[in-house]
Image 1 (spheres, helix red, strand yellow):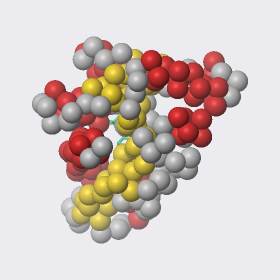
Image 2 (image 1 turned 90 degrees about the vertical axis):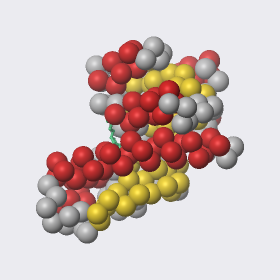
Image 3 (image 1 turned 60 degrees about the vertical axis):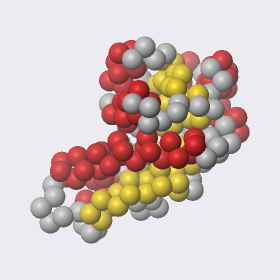
Image 4 (image 1 turned 45 degrees about the vertical axis):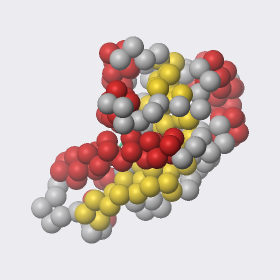
Length: 188
Ligand code: GRF
């Protein structure tokens, strides 16, 4: 399966997906990494692996729809079949959604619908809920609102700090994302 990964940040989930492919745990190929920030550390992770990078410079376009139209053209060159958002901090518009219906998925560090948005881990910790977790879901035009594909619970212990909780969540992410992608790919 020809995969595009979209990311804006550190890229630990990008690395987890790439490593699962290398380990033959995921029958896919990352054809392109799409970033909105060329200085993001994930760009280095892609270069190390000789994965092409497409920098979508939203500000070069009059509208977000036009930016996404150029992105669709780029993705078509690679015949992309599945898009995995991994810390991509932008809302996807109907332009891209229509080009890839039910083919765009995202990972979010909470048990959705609880704690959507940018601070899923922090918000759950501050709310003192007994458990949080990780969600993989289809992307729609809302914020972390599409239908759920997979979830894994992470209990919040009395002894947890925000830092320890973040570490637990990320460790779960790095297993759940590649395994969920593998399930999706194998069932198609
Ligand atoms: C992850 O926590 C993911 O759930 C969220 O953004 C973070 C990305 O981390 N959407 P990384 O760039 O993959 O390290």
